[in-house]
Length: 219
Image 1 (cartoon, rainbow, N blue to C red):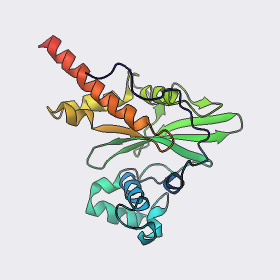
Image 2: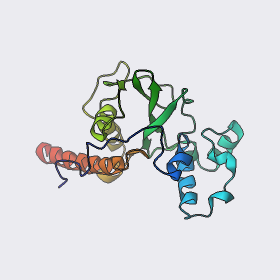
Image 3: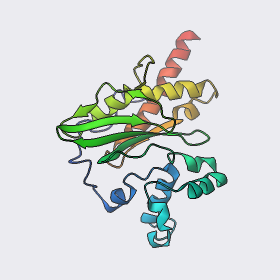
């Protein structure tokens, strides 16, 4: 049985969105492609070689069409995140939602520094318009506030649900009988909020518990 509360510090607040906490975060800042981010991280940590061995072009936030198409030709999952919209001036990614789909689709939560504070938006790779219950703040969000922003996100014109991430798990469950596969169909991560991935894992386990409970009641 999953704990009733996530094992994370919901009050955590990063000092700034524009001051990377580590060299790794600075290098990965605004790199769009999800598998490319993982590859760069593996090079930084020395798991697959040294960073100097990596083509500098692959460290760019955005790839040119030829390089992007070559990556996708080998495995369509390499396209995940590469078609996200360009960043607005002064905008950074503060979290991302990644789907275990054929093309590893990515939803990017972004923050932009403005005169009177920080503005937020959520974008995907298909020009979808999203509505947020919170679009700005004076300071960086606490972890709990970021989670609330993510979970209350809705496609413009659609009914808002209690959990944006659970919508993807529910949809995945229609195509597989494995609760574990459905629960892990989406994960949320952030270089600025280290415990966000732990919350995401807790949310997945909690979804499984709730699905089992419903199945027990309905027979």
